[in-house]
Image 1 (cartoon, rainbow over the protein chains, first blue to last red):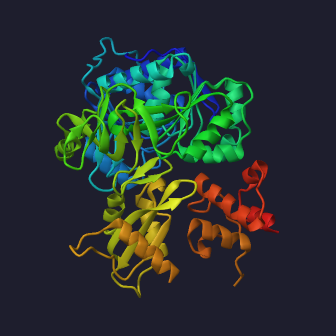
Image 2 (tube, rainbow over the protein chains, first blue to last red; image 1 turned 30 degrees about the vertical axis):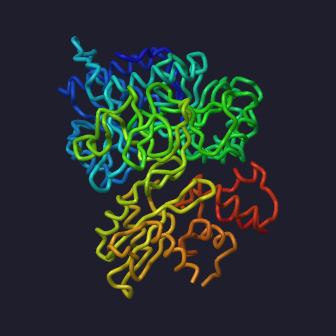
Image 3 (cartoon, helix red, strand yellow; image 1 turned 90 degrees about the vertical axis):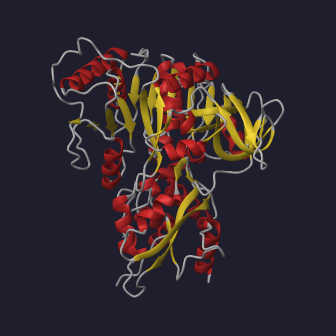
Length: 481
Length: 73
């Protein structure tokens, strides 16, 4: 086992808390069950639940037999689960206690509730550092999946760096407010705390009542470290009183642009905690760059210095430079192994050994980075990235839709929401409510468009291509007219 | 046919859907799209309509279309 299990994992919503002994026992029991089923090194497991101690027992059990965990959004639509299962060649599925797989996948389903009295495998196969450990999906669960594969080496590198940069003492009591299928929540928040041997408290994502109690929860549990997304703080600052116990040491905020005003408001709310604006990507196992309020004044776009590794830019001339303006490129020991079975994407993601982030920014001579632009067209809904192409492809499978084009629209709370314009085959027969229902059955809730526009035609450039910004403008204009 | 209430209308405008998709007895549990983010947008819309800030208690007790109607008077 590569992870020291020393602390307690608590689910604040469900009220369950597993100490280290219970957690270790559950990991052994589950690993034994997997082994009894003939599962072992290199086998891929889909984990379809999260936010509980049982999730971590499943994850570590999979890893302890050398398996690979593909963590999916528990809200994934049935069709997405089937597609991903086939794509990764899953050998088993882990669901919540007493739960069922959302679709008949023809695979063994483990709900952790089995009373199998099997003892741990006598000679665990274990794993090697460069074995695949984790697959996280960044897009394509409705089309061709794009799964980021991390090895034990890339994950452990990131965790060791996180402990170094956050501090072991701060990580002794951590609060996670994010979903555990999300790299930020899973790697940055949860695994970093567990790796540091600390206690981890899990707050169910999106539970307003508990967000309203954030200050009390921080005090009751003596929380020292937490990380979240800007939209979480927009809710928390509105709903919750400030903590008064003075326990908070470090707060990370990331996964979406953080304005200087919101950054300052969080600093004020916490009292004297060090609040950092973080930059990270699933492909680099979460955070790689951070700007702490103890070192920098809050500033829009400021993401600070690398947390291990190097940063540079790829200039408009296609040259690599250590500083200047251009597409940010990074080297990091926590860089992914690659995209699962997508050699085409691996090639495009690298430039002379550097990972191309797709984000535009500037790096100063002393290595301080600022973001000035963004990945083209990716929609950032409260930190969750939505790839508009996935939505286009899905909707164009509906018999009533001729063409679809999704795009991001500004939103005060979430940063962006998902909008979509469709042109339809038969305007007389078209039923938008039916299309929305059809879409909701096939798409995770977070990706479902909030705003729909029916256009006579999806506008194209003179080369016949789609420019999503132009389509968004046309859609909004159609609404106003 | 009953006229939609002010609460239905306001929530429908926040959720960017038709009033028919917001039943008069709907709640956060049953109305599609009424998640925590939408709730904060609803709060902003209510504050604008009422020309005052809502307290955190008011916001957390706001769970149904009837609650919105009650707040709107």
